[in-house]
Length: 293
Ligand SMILES: [Fe+2]
Image 1 (cartoon, protein in one colour):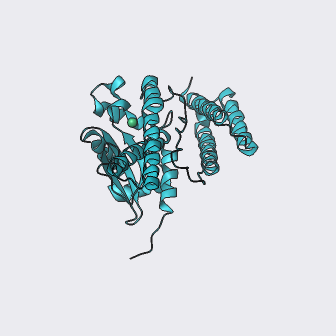
Image 2: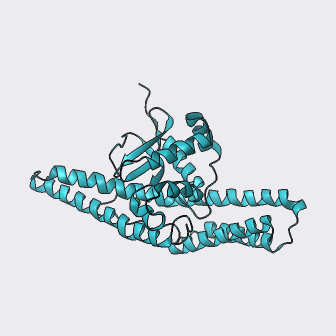
Image 3: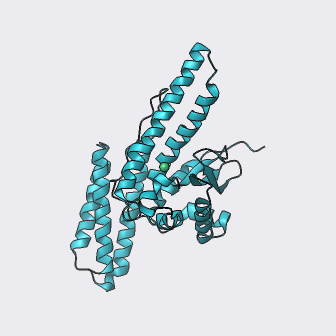
């Protein structure tokens, strides 16, 4: 199979995964489903056609157009699924993984993804719920003797829950490469080049003291991107920033597969980065503006 046909087949597989995902999360919007069906049919037709190298440029353009449309659909879906209601106290829930447990192999194994999502992330959700309920109880009883403990729990589990949610969305099967458009321009402006950004982010991840995260944030007040480390989930956090891309470097994220070689996990992780979703978070984050002081 030629490279082009292999590429077309990969896009077709990706559409199948998106459709399975829509089914799983019970999306019934007929316009979105019809668009994906149409794209699926179109891509299948491309796979079935005899493709020679003379038509490579044309086919690449067609594939790029299909990709753009899928990105737009993903953006629409994200808007539809936007959280508009506040989560009641103690009622946070574990968001489903946006792909199968084995979808990021060989970069991240199925066993890690299962334990990381179903066990570790669930623990943070449960911990946040408990902390919120205990603080509510403290307000009602006016007994604040354990407040420091529950505040710490709320910060630890809350950050754990929110960062993991961004982390799952920030990866995708057959991801990687580099971002496009506005996000790429901003990265080049703030870090010099994409390569310089990638090296800086990787070093930040490898050098986290103990367990923690590497985090690309948008700083609304300074209108720029910044790379931060976080020890645990919340120590070294810079408040007033919005995480754009996060990399979990707790041992539970890689140890079963990479043992103590965090650096190897960090280097391989770039192969599953979901740049379209990351660009979407960046666009949304940039909408927050403050009055100039
Ligand atoms: Fe984690």
